[in-house]
Length: 148
Ligand SMILES: [Ca+2]
Image (cartoon, rainbow, N blue to C red; front, side, top):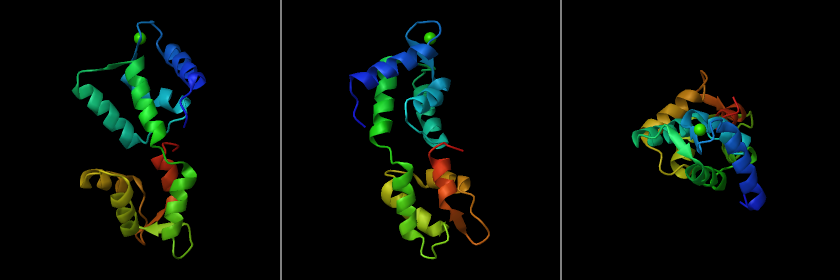
């Protein structure tokens, strides 16, 4: 996504909307809401990581400039729903809208660099693996993008 002046203005307007006491800072608990309004779709795991990193630096508040860095980073690295589903579709050999758990693991170790094993396990947990060890990937993509 191109970050032009219009997008920047939009970001500032939305940020200010959340900054009710006008001190130039917003609570990191609002990070998910404000990112989604501005077109980023952090997953729950991504958001937890962002918040965890900010908290470990003793920041419960975030400034506009720092917020912008996070947002840009997310928007520039974001796969669209279509991109993700297309990748899954390549692995959907039975063409039934599902991929198996091992294929998902392989895909994640290839694309999402660097994900720790722990993070992969967390994602698998969210993926609702069924009794055939398969995952409904359209549903899963929505979970990944924070739509569910
Ligand atoms: Ca404030």
